[in-house]
Length: 124
Image 1 (cartoon, rainbow, N blue to C red):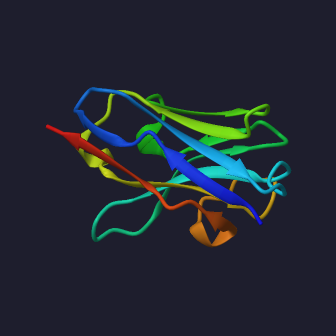
Image 2 (tube, rainbow, N blue to C red; image 1 turned 30 degrees about the vertical axis):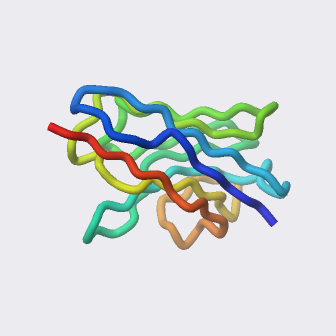
């Protein structure tokens, strides 16, 4: 059973930076994709960034390309999301999730393990 724990959320002013971290345990994820999703109030959960653990490939939501960077640490079993130049529209609960396969999918239904989420609030 894979377990995920997110950390690093908080309140930041527009233009600022945050780093989210997802710690994975329980095994069974090192051949799969790990991704970050976010969900703002009244909106659907959306894909933000993903990384294939075994392939090392990455993918990003168009709106965050050039601002966010996803990376993994094989020794610590963590996946980080570095977020720069944050905007108020980035405000959401951010979740990390483990996918069903090695290729990066952008739909939540392709992910079967989820963390509890961490709140990111960007003020004007």
